[in-house]
Structures are given as C-alpha cells and as structure tokens.
Length: 317
Image (cartoon, helix red, strand yellow):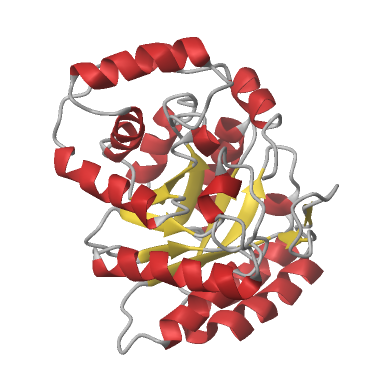
C-alpha cells in the first residue's frame, strides 16, 4: 500500500537536462551544465530533499539523465526508503543541448513502451515503484490500445504501480476517459495532472478520482515559473493582484502558489520542480504555514485555451 509521511515530492525535470521551459531555468543552473556538474548539483538537491523528509521522487525517460542521476544517488545511500515514479512515452532528443529545434518526441506505442521499460529498469533496477504513461492527451490513442494495457497489467502483477500523467487544454476530458477505463480494468492507481492557481479546470474531477482511490500527483504548481517572481512577461495584472493577496496574509507569491495546491485535500503529492536548494528550502518552509486560511482564488483561473497557448510561448532555456 502506497503511503508517504510527506506530501511534498521532488520532480527532476529541471535537474536532469540542461534545457527546460521553466522561466529562469538557465540562471538557476548556472553556466556549467556538463553532465558531471549537473549530476553533482542534482545530488546536492536530492541530499537536501531527503534529509528534510521528502520521499517521493519523480523522473522520466525524457528528462535527460534524471533516472541515471537519481539511481546513482540512491546507490550512495546506506538506506533508501523513498518512492520513485518514472514515465514512458517521450524520447529525449536534445543531446544535452539547449538551442535545438526539437527537444523531445512522443511515442505511445507498445514497441516504445517495451524499449523504454528496459532502459528504466537498467537505470533504476528495483528502485522503480511507479510507471506512468507520459502526457496523455484527449486525442491520444494509448488508453484504447489493448496491447499497451496488457503490457502494463503484466508490470502491475510484478509489483509496479501504474499511472498516467495528463497535459493540454483537454485534461478533464482525458481524466474522464481514464476513470471510465479504470472502472473496468482497475489497472491505474496514480494520476499526475497540471493544477495550479492559473489552471483550476480539473479540480472537481480530481476530487472524484481521489474518491475512487486514485492517488493524485499535482504537477506544474508554479505554472513553469509563471506563478513566481521570475515571471516578468506573462499575466502581469493577475500577478500584481496575487502578490497583494499574498502580502495581506503574510505570504510571498511562491508560498501562496504552493500552499493553494497543498491545501487541496484530494492531492496526495505536491511536486516541486525546484532547481536549487534555495528554491526547495522555500517550498519546505512554507509548509509550516499549511493551516493558514487562503481566500478564494477562483477568479484567477485562466481559460484552458489561454493557459496552454501561453505555455507554448515559454522558451527552452
């Protein structure tokens, strides 16, 4: 049975490759982005996370060398009692570069599942606990592919938890389909979804999923940096108002953004994509204020089209 004492999870999307779409990512990592230096930096962040009670770690085949970095770190621990989730369905193509035309490729075929599962097991060995289909969208045929579902069922029989992550403006539609399929198959136990102050579109259906014993993992809580002080370009009117609300209850913008999601009772894990120990420490410290009453922020929800079209404008950096 899945159980964690700490609701905070650490995602390695911004720590496992030199380029990502988070605003300010380049400055967070500094100029030296060799594999060796990035692994050392990643391990420092992992050390701080684990020593402060974080036990859930999120990686993916497409997050550069996140699986390798995490696995190498786990091997250095005298004892590791964390829970590791990885994802398949995307291939990393940037070859450790940032200024490239194509960073990743999507493939939800059975053949690719088998290939990436071998790679994940080679990297993580028995440390892998959860395997998710990466970024399922409403037009993705993967949930209707009996060969993929059968292969995932075989993994589950061997003790691996199975889940999906969702993405795009039709997340709610994808989750509806996911729940209907799971009523029959009972295959999935995890759902990783974008939810934050700007994208509140799935709140009701996520609550329903939780009631149906699905573990909900919240991702992109800071909207890839749009809900942080690093954002100097997008949604500035909304940010000004949010900063004012945050100050009125003795929070900063990042604390407000994280606590709003953390307080949702149906969320099992709140991922932080912190790139630095300072960012991670900020997230950890704000949990001390977890019982603070936050006023309703429903009016700050963007339309799904606005949210996702703006997300596409974010630069890899």
